[in-house]
Structure formats: C-alpha cells, structure tokens
Amino acid sequence: MSVLLLSCIALASCASHTSRTVSTPSGLSYRIVTRGSGPSAKPGDYVTIDETTTFADGRVHFTTKGRQPIRFLLGGRQVIDGLDEGVTCMKVGERRTMVVPPHLSRRSSYPPDLDPRAVLFYDVSVVAIDRAPRS
Image 1: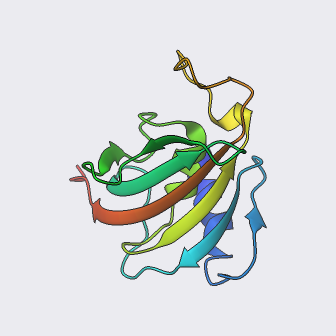
Image 2: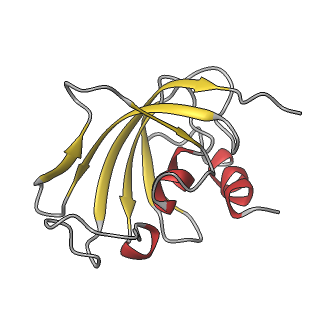
C-alpha cells in the first residue's frame, strides 16, 4: 500500500477534528481550520490549491495570494512530500495549517532564502479537485 494511501487512511480518521493538531507517522502535523465538502483528494487526482508558506519567524517564503493557484498531480512528486501528504484527503473548500519538518521538504535545489534544515509552515486551501481519467 502506498505511503500516500496510508496517510489518507490516517488523515481521514481525524478529519472531523478541527480544534486539535494531528501528527502523522511521517512527522507532518496539521490542523483543519475549515472543513470542506465533496469527495476527498486522493493520489492520481489533480488538485488546485492556494497556499502561503512561512518560516518559523513568520517571514513569507511563498504565497499564491494575488497570483494563480497551484495545480499539481497528487502523489506525482510534483511538490514536496509534506505537501503531497498534507493535501491528501482534503476536500474542496477545506483549509489546513501544516507544519512540515525538513525531511518532508527535500528538494533537488534550494532557493537562496531556504535553509534545507528549515521547518516550513503551510496554510493551504483546496480550490478544486479534478479526477484524472482512469484506464
């Protein structure tokens, strides 16, 4: 069973708990700020999100505010592992805050302002989920 599928099972069991922080076996932690509706995002779906990424000191590293939302293939390794895991099982309209440890934010290269050992803080809202055609 894939890591994302296992994450989906673990995350789904806590999906109704909007007032507490949940930690996953991988080290990701999140809190549901606003619950969404409809089907949950699963690996193989294209997910469109709005996100703001900050450092521990509150400085903004990246944001889609005032820009186009990000669209990616969930489970397609197009984003960092922490974001792939954290968005799995989210629904349209759902908003989560996530704390992503360094081992879940590895990249092939790092922007000058991003220390590879940095913990990243995400504020993510799902805008759309598009089911990929299944063969």
